[in-house]
Structures are given as C-alpha cells and as structure tokens.
Amino acid sequence: MNDVIGLSLVFIGVGFFLAGSIGLLRLPDLLSRLHALTKADNLGLGLLALGLGILAGDWLIGLKLFLIWLLVMGAGAAAAHLIAGQALRREDSR
Amino acid sequence: MSWLLIALLLLLASLGLGLLRALVGPSLADRMLSVQLLGTGGVALLLLLSVLLGQPALIDVALVLALLAAVAVAALTGRELEHE
Amino acid sequence: MLSSSLIFALTGVALFALGLRGALLHPALLGRVLAINVSGAGVFMLLVALAYRGPAGNPDPLPHALVLTGIVVAVSATALALAMGRRLRQLEEQADD
Amino acid sequence: MIIDAWLLLDLILALLVLALGWASLASPDLKRGVTLFIAFGMLLALIWARLRAPDLALAEAVIGAGLTGALLLSALRDDPGLERPGGPGRDGSGWWLGLLTLALAGVMGWALTHALVWHPNSGQAQAIAAALPESGVSNPVTAVLLNFRAYDTFLELAVLLVAVLGILALGPARPAYRPAGPVLAGLSRWLLPLLVVTAGYLLWVGAHAPGGAFQAGALLAAAAVLLRLAGQADAGLPGPAARRWLLVAGVAAFIAVGLAGLLGSGAFLQYPAGWAGSLILLIESAATLSIAVTLALAFIGGRQSEIPVSPVEKESTPC
Image (tube, rainbow over all chains, first blue to last red; front, top):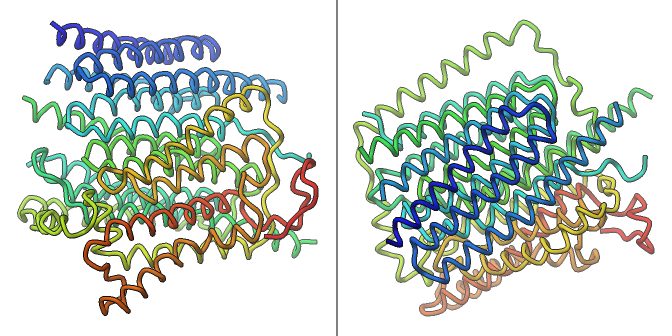
C-alpha cells in the first residue's frame, strides 16, 4: 500500500516538472514563465521527495529529503527575485 | 523498481524540454531560468538515481547541487562594478 | 555492441574534439578558455566512462581519483589563465597609449 | 527491457551534454556562453552520478556548476574587452583546423570502440578493493588519493599553490561587488552557514563515503564567493599573514607527515600501521583549508593592496 502511495506521489511530482517545462517553453513572456516554472518545480520536487521518503520508509532519509526540499524552495524564491530583478534592470538600461 | 526508472526517464525528458529554453533564449534571463530549472530538476533526478542505483550518497550530491545552484544564480545576476 | 560505457566514452571524445576546435578557432580569449574547459570535461568523461563497466560491477576508483584532482586543477588553471588574460589586456592598453 | 531504458537515459544525457557544450562555444555573446556552460557543468554532475562516481558528482556540482562559472562571469564583468576578438587572425585557416579535429575525433572514437568491445576490464578495481582495509579509510577514492597515490595529491596541492602564486603575482584584485540588495543579502544570510556546515560534513564523511578535502574545500570557497558577490571585498578571508599560512597548510601537512614517515618507517609518505586513518584526516583538514583559500583568492583575482578595497574597510592591507 505504501508503495502505491509513494509511487503515485513520485509520478505526480514528475508530472509537475513536465508541466513546468512545457510552461517554460510555451508561455509567451518572461515573467509568466518565471511564475509558472518556480511554482511547478518546487511543488514537483516536494511531492517527489515525499513519495521517495514513503518508499524508503526511513524517517532519517525522509528528514534529509524534507530539508533538501526546504533549501530548494528558499533558494528558488530568492533566485526568481534575482532573475526578475536582473531582467528589469536590463530593460531599464536599454 | 522499474516504475521508478520510467519516472526517471520522464523527468529527464522534462529537463531536456526545459533546456531547449536555454538553447533558444531569447533573453539572458530566460537562459538563467532554464539553469534554475536544471538545478531543481537535477536535485529531483539525483534523488531518484540514489534509489535506483542504491547509492545513498547521491542524496548528499543533491544537497550540494541545491546549494550551488543558488550560488550560481547569485553569480549570474551579480551586480555591476562597484566604482562606476 | 552499445553499452553505457561506450556511449559516454564516445561523447567524451566528441566533447574533446569540440573543445579543441573551439580552443583553436574561438575569436575571443575568454571563449578559448571556455573551450579548453569543455575539452577537459571530454577527457574526464572518457576516463569515467572507461572506469564504468556495466551496471552491476563497481567502477574502478583510480580514474575517479585522477579526474577529481583534474577538476580542481582545471578550475585553478582557468583562474590563472583569466588573470594572465587580464594582465595581457593591461599591457596592450599601456602599449597603445 | 530494463537495460534498454538505461541506455535510452544515457543517450538522452549524452545528447543534452553535447548540445549544451556546442551551444556554449557557438554563442557569439560570451555571457550567454558562460550561462550555458554552467548548465553544462550541472549536467556533467548528473552524468557522474549516473556513472556511479558520486565523489566526482560532488566536486562537479561545486566546481563545474558553480565556481568555474562564477570565475568566468567575474572576469567578464571586470573586463568586457575579453569579448572582443583577440590574438592572431585565423581567416581562411578555420575550415581545415575544424576538419582536422573532426578527423582526430574519428580516429579516437574508432580506437575506443575497438578497445571497449574487444578488451575486458582490468582487475584494478578488485586490487584496490582488496587493499582497502589497510588504507585507514573505507571510501576507495579517498584511499587512492591519500594513501595509494598520495604522491599525486601532494604534488597536486603544490600545483594549486603555484597557480595561486601566479595569480597573486599578476596584479591587484578585481574590483569588489556592490553591497547586496535585500534579496541577495537575505539569501546569503542563511545560505552561508549551510555551505560551511556542509563543507565540514563532507570533510568528515570523506573517510567512508563520497566526500573529502577537495569537495569540502571547494564548498568553503563557494561560501567565500557568495560573500564577495554580496559585497564583501575580502570574501571573508582572514588577514594577509593568516592567508599565507592557510595557503601552504596542505602542502606543509603533507611534508610533515611524509618526513615523519621517512624517519619512522623508512619511506616518504609511508603511514605507520594503525595511524593511517588519523593522519589522513589531519592531512585532509589542512588540505581543505588550503584549497578553500586558494580557490577564494582565485576568485578575488589578485593581491588586495593597490586598490581601495571597500568603503567600509578601514585600511587596505597587502596580501
């Protein structure tokens, strides 16, 4: 049972990654791509890590995966700000 | 286990699609965004690989990649010269 | 007979050649430094691919150790090359004045 | 079926890495080229992980994906002239040089294919695995680096020292970065401790799992790079005298342990029985600091004496 739940979470997570990549390719302008991508990826990684944690069945590994997810989320939010800021600065200077 | 391998392939396909944005651009920020995706997706890929290859050390690699992806974006968006 | 080892060994050769061509032909100094890094990555990939034989066996750690030192030397050599490029540019500017 | 899926994975990875390598060199805009090169480095880290080389994946994640890119970007920022064509003219000779490298690649690829298809693996991996219990550590890569082939690592640290001396001799430091805005300042405030703690973890764990002095040192250097990007001109490095000591610490530890071995066991770098593990940790700790300071100074790009370092600094100090 745990295996089924874990695997489903992994696949839903991968689905979010696919959605994010397709968004990155198809959305018309930079800022909408930025929003779509960072949200989809962080959610995708979270679900995938949760699924793998359930599959591993080891709370220590689960904790490590959770910490990595927190780290990626924090860094991702900052990175999105920095990239958006850089894009705006470049537009100003043109 | 082979279900995880399918997940891994799908994830890699997703990263490949994202990298197309890095190749075509057009703006530099688009390419940075693609690098950001590769960082997050790379972490996910490493976590899956660590289970599939039976190498728990790859979780450490995922941690380090997550840390360095943030440093890389900081370097990419680095400010201009101090005295200008 | 296609194997993982062969795929990455051939990719390594291709990267090496790509980098070598860039190191010879890239118009800008920084581009040539970049190209040398790409060709170095090709050599590393060749070594790691040769250390890896089949998914079952444990890979040979000796090439891994060589490549590890190689990665660190490559980054410091890159830094030295960039510092030399900068000095070269300064000397050229002085000569122009 | 399972084997085929792995091969498909390998083919996709190989194609992606080739495309990124090609695109980063073909780009006329060098900042774009370096951005693609950072992606190239991240992909390499994934490939090393795939090829069961986690030690390399760690090093590549820090250096290929981070430090090299940061170095190239700071050079580009400091001297936009690097983008201009320079060096001898190559008009007309380009096509045959390209053809020549293509031919070289063909010959190498043909030879490799033959070698891989016809020749089995040598027994080296088994030999190393058999000698591993005597090495004092259980991570085979660390055993090779610091016991079986410690000479190589010793000389490599000497090479790093020479490189950084060259950089220091070539001129003053690159100009510092502006003080960070709120986002970058916030990021570095919580990222820095994590980088330092992870570096310590990798150094400690290197004895029995992937990690070790190179990865830990590079991670510490990444922390220094982040500090400098956030506006701290000296990248958090200590004063000039301490810097010199730290730069030579790795080589010095190697020489000290090597000479002690010479006196004790009659051979340079021969560890006395039972002491190998502790001596390796001692050398690795010193090497970590040396590598970190070396790479941080490489990023700073020269002596910090001839320019006003930053408005906050009271006086400029020679290094």
